[in-house]
Length: 118
Image (cartoon, rainbow, N blue to C red; front, side, top):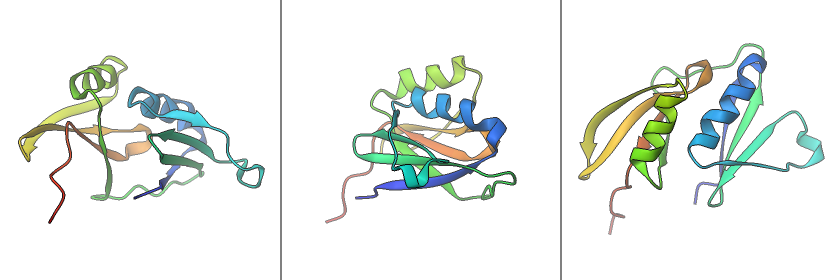
């Protein structure tokens, strides 16, 4: 199980970044006091840690992929909130989309994961 992903965000993008992840069903979580400058969000045991950084690193091709419990609702929520999102070709017979989180991070939105390898 992947427990968490740390994503660098500019301090000015922090609130909008939190909103982006909340629209995907993540909720703020209390973090240890030793990590007070980080913002933690969680959904179903998986966490996103937003790391405020003056000059955040944004990979050109690297991305985070999340399965949306209700793909169409999540897509509409991101689109309605003004986030850039576009449908992509289906993989494994399920819709997917590419969204751009605040600061330029690519987030793949998936309706369903592939079947586990045997």
